[in-house]
Length: 350
Ligand code: NAP
Ligand code: F7E
Image 1 (cartoon, rainbow, N blue to C red):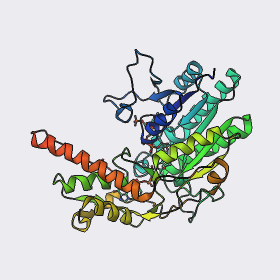
Image 2 (image 1 turned 180 degrees about the vertical axis):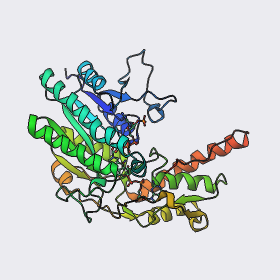
Image 3 (image 1 turned 30 degrees about the horizontal axis):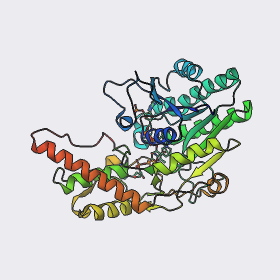
Image 4 (image 1 turned 120 degrees about the vertical axis):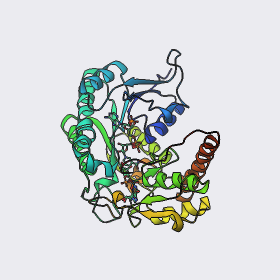
């Protein structure tokens, strides 16, 4: 009888963590997620998958943090995972300019801490566990599109610099100790579960609220930036495929198409039935000190070696986000009419 595979996911409460958990549970994995202790619940994206821990659910959650090496080392030793996915990060580019040192500690040194724990675990367990490191197209930064695995990195933010460091820590450990560590270089991927301060979700969330009269204005920064936007469900499949490949390697994951923020806004507003020119205003606080102007990936290596290709189109992605957020706005409207205060959306630098 085949034994159940175990996965350990750091960053399980995030957008990608939730889609990856769904994918792995669907494949029969036992999934162990590391979550941060926070004063409010941070497991909203997993609630539909979580069962009472007193029963034998296939999803188990453990407290831990990328800042805490000893805890991660202990968790790997106790759980004995076959696959480890490092999706944990302070992942907001604009915020990384304000919190550069913290971002480096979690995104760069945190990845190293987990890789060091992985290295000891791999050697002590006598097995060949596999490690996925969540790299980013932000690492290409100012390098001109189309970007592929051979394109030089030119990071333009503390976040991107930290991701470059984590990428090279992974390669170094692979070469130095023969470990199975694969780096994904994923271009932007979105979904109705995207954090609300990333531009796509900020737009769809605001359009839903504007449509129903819950908000008047949407304040944005640079509308000319271009991104290669895919759907998160397609991209977590690529992560898993990298760890099923016979050898560890590095792969770009992208759709090969790019759109400007303005084009995303136009399409989303059209679906929502909102005249965006009447409600969108520019706010300098959303510009970045150094911007990444254009990202468009060439994922031909992943297609050739892994057989991966995206299945969800840009138009379907935008539509699914707008429809989801119209529904959410409808729920807020119902609450407002019942006398509840619904707070305005938006973070300090979203
Ligand atoms: P996300 O929604 O921001 O999720 C980040 C996850 O990391 C959350 O679970 C978060 O926990 C966790 N985390 C934050 N600080 C941590 C810490 N100190 N210790 C342990 N966990 C911590 O990001 P995502 O969009 O799912 O992206 C997943 C990964 O891929 C990230 O590493 C991101 O940088 C990278 N990436 C994303 C994209 C994209 O377009 N989405 C593209 C390329 C690469 P809380 O819920 O408690 O905050
Ligand atoms: O910005 C512009 C902004 O914050 C996209 C992360 O998942 O993908 C993400 O990083 C573009 C930028 O994503 C606003 O200047 C305009 O040019 O949605 P974003 P990002 O910076 O590309 C990469 C691949 C990651 O790895 C990251 O973790 O949109 N923009 N106006 C705005 N952006 C935001 N957030 N808010 C605005 O008001």
